[in-house]
Length: 118
Image (cartoon, rainbow, N blue to C red; front, side, top):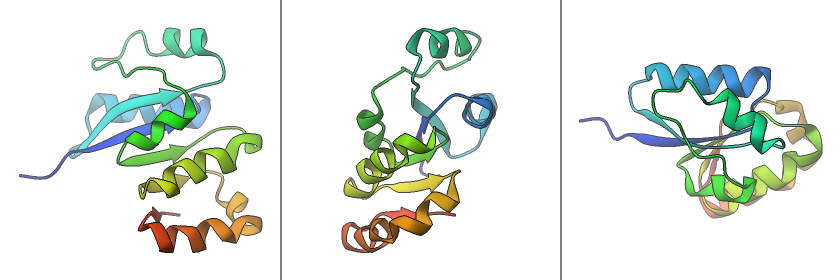
């Protein structure tokens, strides 16, 4: 039996909402466990039709998930990445270029056992 990984998505814009819908529709081995968004009420409305509606949580709570996907504004990239990396999670940034000036996050991931998947 394949272990199910929980997924948390930061940002429910064009990328994050599309990904959330895909996981909710069914991706073997993945379960959408939480989302975080700037506009909580809008996020709740966007999740209304989901089969397994995840909670809308503060960004820092996403680090409780096995996999944290960043699909948020650049201004909060580092806070999302840091929380996931400090918790030793799998971090998947959609804003890959945001890593370039932040190589300290890559070094920290080596120390915590986190994985950054680009």
